[in-house]
Image 1 (tube, rainbow, N blue to C red):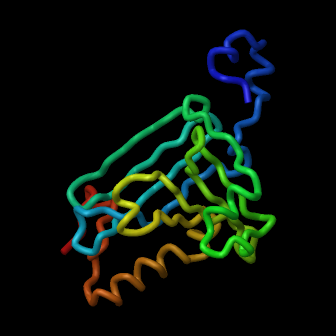
Image 2 (tube, one colour):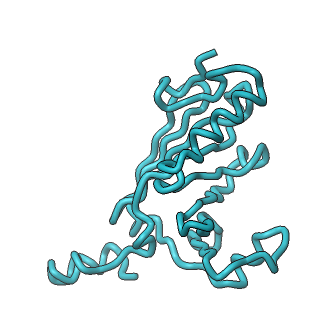
Length: 176
């Protein structure tokens, strides 16, 4: 992919036609991400992939943290099949539908498709919070099918308390 500095020398039509490394994955993904500011050690996470940018929002339990980055500035590259397999507990479980993306040498994003060809996502941000657990996200298709809503209900049932998950719609806090 052309870096941002080189892009300015391309004709306008070429810049418009240039594909993002994440082409085809555009949309809003929601799910769970670990946080030590939540009573249940997790909060709602939203990843928005657009043509040129990635936006992230996290309900920490105390607030909403937000970040936006240009895909070109992030410098994402596609990981090899072997690199993706090396991230898995069972390397033979890597499927042809599984793709990985990295920033420099650091894995950052794993994408795979479910039985209905809806992508699921795991972010690998390498932060301290990942010692608490992974960041797992549901695709727009999975949200539409109710998987995200069912997962939230399951957490509430497990903890016996409605509204225990810090949510973006509640200023990053749990209701309780």
